[in-house]
Length: 499
Image 1 (cartoon, rainbow, N blue to C red):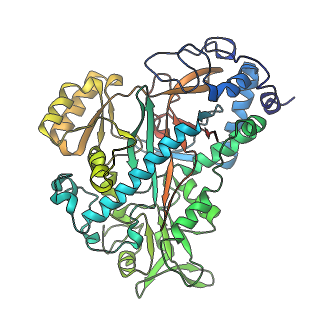
Image 2 (image 1 turned 30 degrees about the vertical axis):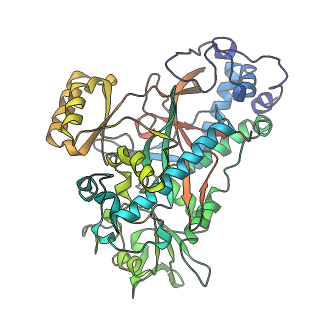
Image 3 (image 1 turned 180 degrees about the vertical axis):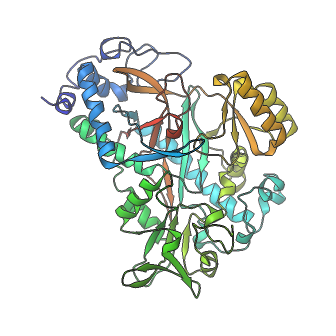
């Protein structure tokens, strides 16, 4: 009998599942300060995880190891990689995958879904406002110097009509859970990545747990590329079949695997800047049979490098004249240039006020308490409590350039404090969160590890689509709170149950 067959049978024929601290979960320790995704405080499995726990408890350590090797091997064979930036060189790695899925109920997902719809709706209204009327700045909803002084604010976008006012068509929002419930850790509105890992995890784990997957009633996510294509093409009015291109910085980019994957799944052109040319404010791709017009660009290149004529003149990644073609209305760019203002970690702290202002609603998903080092009180508090806080650069990503106070040395804190004093506007700080933990197979044992999730939200001409799942990231190092793959994290599948 194969491991998959073993784990796919008999998961529901026992009156009581294995408890934490016994059987296959003998090394599974519960700590009251962490919400556990699998077990309740008394060690019994949560109802949504009972079948999963029963299934895992019937397998031996060797069988679980074989299962883990199988899903990891699939990532190796398909070349599912990410790039780590070192001090002197870049290196490419296979992203680690954990074989145990995380499970959320329909009610839990409905709460997240409604919160993300609300949040993205408000952010698109905010972006339109700051590039047109500026009511939110006039009314003091958010400090005008914070917005207008943001490096991601693009004066070139002032007064420019964005198709259907959709500045953010693709959003990846990081959601965490503590004992207080779900909260948004940060928004990724410029060029969010990770959806290919979400789909790859699902394919691998679905094959590992075929019968359990069906019995659990897991909602499907396989149609994400189709929904992405529909979202992108809905942003224009076409008298013909529109041609979509995925603009990538190239194969040295950390998310190049994803760029190629999505282009292939959508039937879109995978292009670098040198593959495109602008003539009479119309964008074309060079092909073996001549120039072909491009109607929609799903860009995975930052604003600065999109167009050397409009933005950074030394960019070799962009397309000269692209912004003029966009301004003329001859091509759609998603996400729109200038959306990075709403991506800024200092602006993040004002999102609840933005939601109340534009929607007249209370935020469904909470924000994490945030101290702005640009403010004297925020800087003083951060410097006085460095050993207890997580400090981040306002425009940072990937886990780079941040300080995790409890896991830092006195020398590291001293060095970071000097950076804070030298450029306080570039930093924010947040408390160290007691992130929820989920079961993982690590070093031959089932143990809890901290997790978060990045759902992907698509905003088209008329509606919002959220795939019922997300990139579930896991801090594979014991005790670590950093889930980024570039910092030793991995990923696992996320199962959203139908009811």
